[in-house]
Image (cartoon, rainbow over all chains, first blue to last red; front, side, top):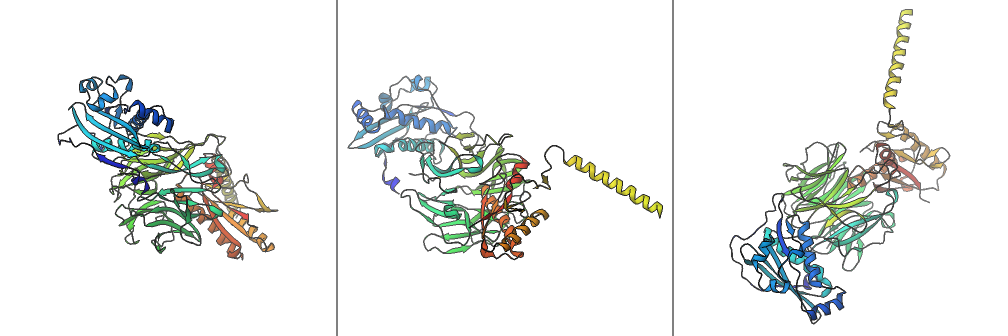
Amino acid sequence: MIYKKLFTIFLILFPLNSFALIEVDITRGNLSPLPVAVSSLSSSDEDKEALKKRLKIEDLGLEISKVVENNLKKSGLFNPLDKEAFLQKPDIAHLKPRFEDWALIKAQGLITGKVNFQDGKLRVEFRLWDVLAGKEMLALAFTTVPKNWRRVGHIISDKVYERLTGEKGYFDTRIIYVSEKGPKTQRVKKLAIMDQDGFNTKYLTLGNELVLTPRFNPTNQMVTYLSYFKNLPRVYLLDIETGIQEVVGDFPGMTFAPRFSPNGKKIIMSFAMDGNSDIYTMDLENRIVERITNHPSIDTSPSYSPDGKYIAFNSDRSGYQQIYVMNSNGKNVKRISFGKGLYGTPVWSPRGDLIAFTKLHKGKFYIGVMRTDGKGERLLTENYYQEAPSWSPNGRVLIFYRETKTNSKGEGFSAKLWSIDLTGYNERLVETETDASDPSWSSLLSN
Amino acid sequence: MNLGKINKNIFMIMFLGFVLTSCATQTTKIDSQIQGDVYTGTDTVEYLADGVPDRVFFATNESVLTTASRETLRKQAAWLRKNPEINVVLEGHADERGTREYNLALGERRANSAKDYLMTYGISSARISVISYGKERPVDSGSNPLAWSKNRRSVTVKAN
């Protein structure tokens, strides 16, 4: 909420014609990313000086353009060109690009912009140009507090992505994860949060107790996770704005595997007692607890469909871990995974049409997707150990964690975050300050 | 009669031979410390008292107690009966070859299977609490079947 208030976004011009301008197809693996030129955002010497004083950044316009470049590059859909080759100066290009100059360096898209600093507020405007058609495609301006400058870069990236692909972006988002340190037999784990591009890392717990599986509320900045506070593994709720945390419900045993319902009003989780784990929900407003499954097998890793009507979950009721789907009241349980191997961690796509999962087969771990009826299984990546996929808010990218095999002396263990496109292309290491696991992708902070 | 005896002896010899060869093939490289996927060594084992091992081991994805595990737990039960002031925590664990959340449930199931057995030997449930660590606290950091077998365990720890 607070985040949205900090920004005022408005269109500055509407020269958009419905001509077939450049566009990017994201449904296939994109083997030839679109060449784009991201010009440095220009600013007056006065404003540059004032911003330098305020933020200790030499040229803020240049830094914002680098945030945009980096985002576009990592999406795998765009190929930002080397600034060294640019012929036109940023301020003039922003007014009226000389399209021949940009076509000469093979740019198809051009992003220009301007940074102002007035009354303690940062005002940033940018334009997206189609170089080949010689047309402006998009023009927007933002006003915010100066320290939010990286988010300006992310919002520009989202707007460009949306204009060129026809789908919402995922750059103005954050990742919450578990930061790990220390030997494998005594890992110290903390909750950490960072911008989607790895900047602004903050640690939310001190590492005094084991914490696992943080997940964002899709509607706000609340997080649910598992903490071993006082050696009692329980599901907690954390407000990352205020830092206030509370235990979710007073269950007489371990609660774990929490996730929010799509409207953010319920938490669904497993409750284990006397050797049996079943799925429960708790309404966060009236604290009413409902039992959803009642079976002597292990039922865990529940995940709602985006319309809230169904729940995918993991159960070994067939003898081994498999994925099941049921109505949100627990009725009509159906097994959907029938491939070879074991299946775990089902996560419903925000688009509703796919379920991402972890699969173990013949000693290898896979991240894959299947349709919600279990058909059309597609394995995206194979490794020694990887699990826990989490969707980008637009349902195009999955982030997960991977652990390495140790050597004969038990050394060489590491845990890292990775991302991969739904297409199976563009697999990337997501850099974190420490080792990391259990990532969860937030919704877009602004729209 | 005699013929029958001779035949029996031959059978015995053949049987022994069979056992020996099968041992020889099983003891190849990996180790003799795993039987039927369950750790049988003493590497990581600590003792609650003289002759009372603190832990039992499980097969992959299993929470069934082996004959050896039941023997260990009977010793623990006898020790607990002798020391009525002692309470225990059973810590259930899984190996690293499973998803985190499923392993939390599996660890809980393993610790409870040990708890149930202690209870059938007269230990009150009020003296036993259970906690699962899933795959979070391995004793062996190796990435091999022997290390994993040591990590699939339920450990009885004094609570007071």
